[in-house]
Length: 237
Ligand SMILES: Nc1ncnc2c1ncn2[C@@H]1O[C@H](COP(=O)(O)OP(=O)(O)OP(=O)(O)O)[C@@H](O)[C@H]1O
Image: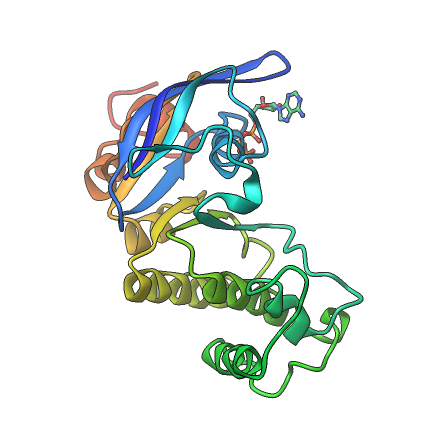
């Protein structure tokens, strides 16, 4: 269980509060207007932004002050952070050992993971020799190999076409199911949220609300979400 215990975040003038819990193994979309604080919330959970007050707990253990690399999570942000001077296999190997001291079994696991994401044999290439979609797969492969309990996704596939984006998100969901991973995914696309995330955290008006069923929320969105989704609802001006 991920617990955000009376969490208060601040970035310049911007403030966000969160007091909620997410069940282990849940897949949760983060939705809300642009600038509402979805990325800010993920940054705090990942450890890149220290909260002003409150605590972040994973299975009851306080991780509020734990350095990012030691938190029980992997992150996939839009900037995939592949190192251009390393090969694809080495970039993935960073998920196993940041110093890249890789054993023969490690290298076998990297190759198997490459196959899993449809990149068999591309391990020796540099990221620049791959398409955007293939680079996304490399980042996903690295997260897959790290197999941390939580996966934070901040629109990592937004630059891809809709078909490829859907394929990558489906791969994430498949991996999450297999490994029992808890997924938090920023989504601007209600279809993605419906397809992949049974629950949604609405981030709006300075607050991240407790998870609620995605279908019901999108079927009858509160005005702030309806406006964001570009919907006009009967009875509203
Ligand atoms: N480094 C910063 N310093 C001060 N304010 C910031 C900083 N980064 C972001 N903000 C502000 O914090 C607020 C939340 O930004 P955030 O990126 O978390 O929103 P978001 O919900 O992820 O938006 P989007 O959907 O557009 O990506 C915004 O008002 C933004 O302008």
